[in-house]
Image (cartoon, rainbow, N blue to C red; front, side, top):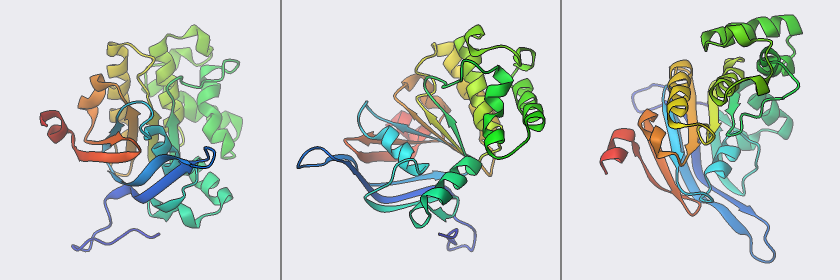
Length: 245
């Protein structure tokens, strides 16, 4: 899938385009629908939030966007690439180069130091350890953790661990940042700081940030909000429209 030309001759501003995607999971004789003909877009330079109650399909939508789950029907385009036309190996390589992940529970490796945790995406791409740690240290310095490079995750506060997780997501300069409930384990003040850092660091013109959350405390950080219910996107609008609805 090549970038689509607009009527004005420009390149499609959408970083992610989901078109009528359906995803089911086996459940005896009748499959369970996780996504029901979902259409969704996320644009470059913006932080898009996917909101809705638990079990509505938010995390499943994230998973199909980054190619960790296959779909039953529909299409998914990510920065001009049609995931459905790529092999599993091609999707894995594309994801390792272009997608950064931030998880609810941080998913830091407890036996590795802070700088080693952040180096992992680079090492997986074939960087040598010294160069990877140099790049990781520079990113950690930017988030205020330059003095904790050799600390272990258990020696950090929740907010500091989240900054490490954000650094790990950004270290390989991915175009797409995926965040699954990034503030669920944080208090309000720490959660706001994490979103401020994420938006400042990641919302560049050539990047896209997608955050799945049910935490209404952070809705104000969004540029665009898509609301899900029962496997469908039932509302999609700018954050200002959403807040005033």
